Length: 125
Image 1: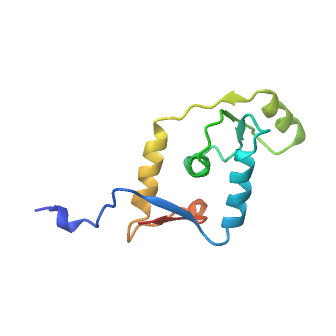
Image 2 (image 1 turned 60 degrees about the vertical axis):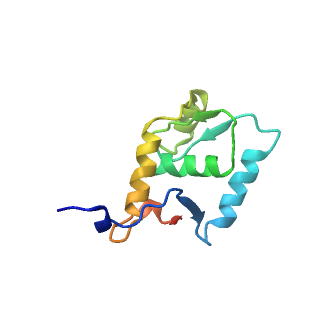
Image 3 (image 1 turned 90 degrees about the vertical axis):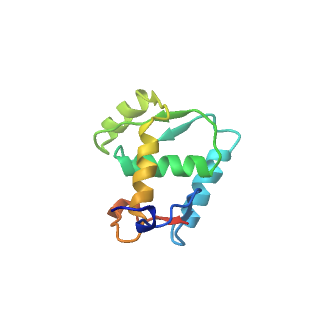
């Protein structure tokens, strides 16, 4: 029979902290998001689940409420970048962000393996 006691504790409020090697870059991003002369934020993070989640974690950490536009590019060639910046899309907070956070929390439990892209963040319980 399965009981609640068999599962690890589930904190009601998950907190994230940047690893020591990422703190300086996090501060740079937060400072840029807070600048009064910047009207919109361009999300150029990797389009995968982890890239989107990392962007949202930084955006929420900065307590940013500026509109977000999404940069979609297929390569880092100059022509692809120009095309991407000419076709920025308004970003919407997707329901999948909740799923991404849940996945991240699950993977931070003892015995779970984190994907290589999540090594810059640690879940603080």
